[in-house]
Length: 396
Figure (tube, rainbow, N blue to C red):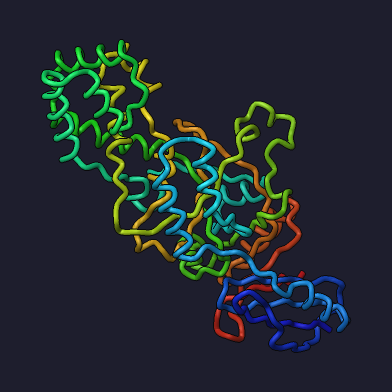
């Protein structure tokens, strides 16, 4: 006999609204399906004990996964957008509005690569230029601002004092300029006549190069997101990997002998919520800072790296997308190292769920790969009694 508990989410609490019984093979296990707020939570108990039913109702009362609302995501973005230096104070401000995800999900189609990655508990970072959205990390550059700034700076080097020029440069991201460096820059600007059309072309190339060198992994926080089952799980024929982020065993990096030299073993990547807005983030200062290394003489380029403040710019250009993608409810793990190589991280799913249209032979492949990976909670997606997606343990 098994008991199915249907729990409705109410603000601040869970309560039992119904208990139904149906016959199954008696076992001593139970499964929990957590759905997003405002939907139905379901606990199925595979046992014959009504006392265990009562115990679990009490144990799970008040426990619901934490989700970031649209308002939470906007507050996080507004706070991030106001940060301009890598200081403890800035980190504290961000942590104050950050609600760490308790569960993350990654939808996959079934193919040789995804089966191998599932079996080995590996997730590969992807560069932004490989995502399906061509505007991902395709940051906004205000070319009118660039032209105005260059023309103003050219005029200033002939008319203003070094101190006034330093003040203007500091407002545009150049900090703590020493006098020798400043004079070298002024002399360089006096002798150089920037080709504005060529500079704009170069800035556009910077944007493309940044897309190629910023790596991330995309997650969501809802394993029953119908849009993502269509979009990333091959029209319900794929599977979803579910990570309990409260479980310390999820992160597997550093547990094998060859992990010693991997930077992922030294720096745990951060996971952030994506903010959705049709108001573009102006990354002009970031683009100019990156391109400055190509415009100025090599000696000044070398010194420049210590004076340009581009803190938090990578987070800002990576964590905003157009509002039409809002249904993704995305969380993004950012790779802490920028470069041309594609890194990976080892994360063991707490459970997986097979799509409701997955062919039988692919079910066997996915289940086999999951068992090799040590995943014991294997579920399947079904259409529930309320005509919404739900999941249940697979029948062995």
